[in-house]
Image (cartoon, rainbow, N blue to C red):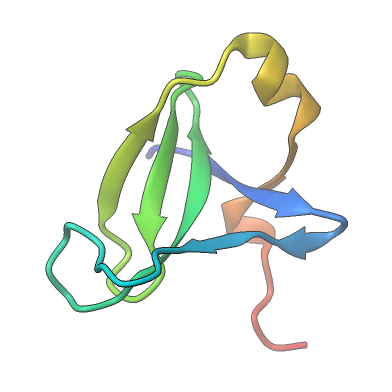
Length: 78
């Protein structure tokens, strides 16, 4: 199982969106979030279909400065 962490900012799940274009997964969404994989890679994941759609090239120092939370511990029902 690939344990992932989700990017947060100021204690909130951080989303990103494209103005005027859609995610490359083809589901029609233009919103995604970033996840940190156990191997240290950062990927963009579509919020609608949960497909991995991008890979980002952050340095180890940049990754350490970002707030990450375990994906499995996130509660959507608050």
